[in-house]
Amino acid sequence: MDAIKALHERISCPRLSAPAPAGEVLANIQKAAFRAADHGRMRPWRFLVLEGDGLVALGELFAHAETVKNPDLSDKERQRALGRPLRAPMVIVAIASPKANLKVPEIEQVISTGAAVQNMITAAYAQNVGAIWRTGDYAYDRNVMDGLGLRQDEKIVGFLYLGTMEFTPPPAPEVEVSEYFANWP
Figure 1 (cartoon, helix red, strand yellow):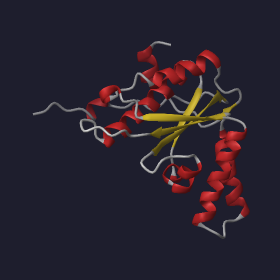
Figure 2 (figure 1 turned 60 degrees about the horizontal axis):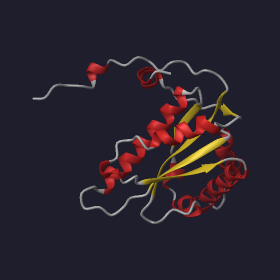
Figure 3 (figure 1 turned 45 degrees about the vertical axis):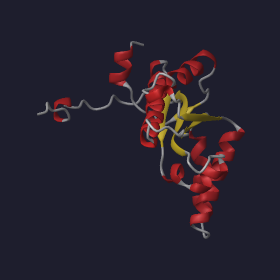
């Protein structure tokens, strides 16, 4: 798919099933991360790829985080937390892993990690792989971060759910871009 077409038409797909991307398709998604804007070529990120038992373990982490917040968690709420990662056959956890650098502040490194995820989700779309970038409370929960082995200075930028689209989502609504851009001064 043409790059401009992918950038203009990319949409998120919340309903994903097996198979997950593999082989060259997955490699293309992963390589796309490394073309993100990255001041100083620091590559201030790392990624965890979860499939199968890894998704089940992530669900356990989510359920544990819910139980810590609410010790009286209902079974229905626990089951919902357990099932969240199972909405796709693959989840890639995108982690901002800042490095000490006097010229590149931490915020730029976190933004760069976000740019890497955006490249990955666009590369997925360009190859007809369904994808959705999720965050939510779990991305900011210390129990989840600790369970995934994050250092104290690392942050989850998102959970990239990948798989086969169960349906083709409708195109995103057109936006009047002139409402968001202005010449200055």
